[in-house]
Length: 99
Image (cartoon, rainbow, N blue to C red; front, side, top):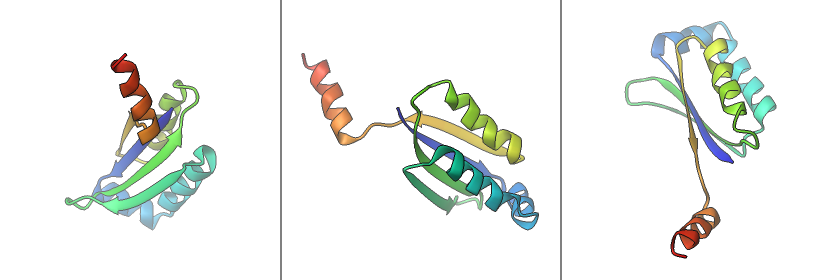
């Protein structure tokens, strides 16, 4: 299932991870391991470093593994996982509701 994985690092933790070189390594490792179909990086209004990845989770049990990836490798990371559907999936689902 297509899933939106977002993570955010507080300013202090993000600065430490950037200075010690762990942030780029974390991002590269995630990109290599999960091969996201899209990846976006941005800052929140409060200055947190954030990323949003679109990944395909064939096995839902992998969700815990993805979250642990950031919790273990990035101190103070906040991780969210949300199922997401594309327009075709939405049409199919709504069509079933109307039957």
